[in-house]
Image 1 (spheres, one colour):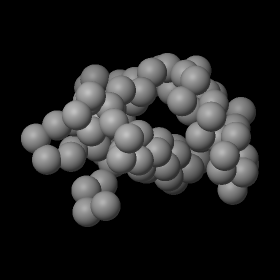
Image 2: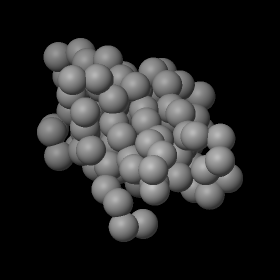
Image 3: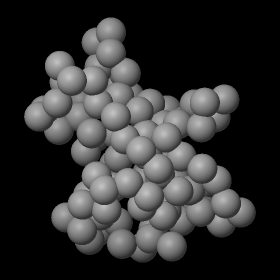
Length: 91
């Protein structure tokens, strides 16, 4: 995917632009972890792996910040179950 995930700190969410649409993952911060509370992919984009791309990009950003992640949303729980290579990030 050509687009990259960004951290919109003003809105407390990770965002991924896909055409004119935006997929996002809301989060809350703790001193040592990021709690991803909700992921949303626009209806027209579902089933194309965009939410997985979003979560992977968010995890990469979290890792680069030296933080851990807490899965507060079912999609992120499922993603982490399917991607043991990211287990080091789980708080």
